[in-house]
Image (tube, rainbow, N blue to C red; front, side, top):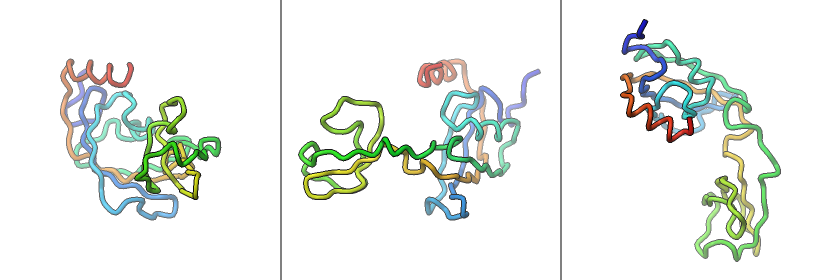
Length: 160
C-alpha cells in the first residue's frame, strides 16, 4: 500500500523549520532555520529526528530531545590541538574554521580556532555543540514525493 503524499515516509522530500535549544531551554540561535531533506536514512538528519518525524503530516509540530551521543557527539579532548602560529594565514581570528590543521595531513575534520596566544594557536576539532544535550523544536512545512533520479542522486551523495 502506497503512503499518501502528505505523510513523512521514505522517498519524500520533507521541508522543516526548526530551532535548537540547550538542556536549560536557552535558544542556541536567535532565529529559526529551514531545511529540506530526503527522508529515509540517507544520513542528512540525526536518526532519532527521522524516527520522530516518520508518519507525521505537513503542519505538524514536534519536539525532539537528544543526548550528546544521539546528536553532535560527546566532547573529545583529544581533538583540541595547539599549533604554531606560522602555519596559519596572516589574517587569523578566533572562530575561523579550517579543513584539517594547517601543516598536517588532512583528517577530514573541520577545526575551529578557539584561541591565539603569541606564537601558538589553539584549534578544536569538536563540533561546537559536542557534549551538549539539545532540543529541536520542529515544524513540517512541506512534503513532496522524490523522483527515482533524486533518490539515486541522494544515495550517491550519502554513500548508500
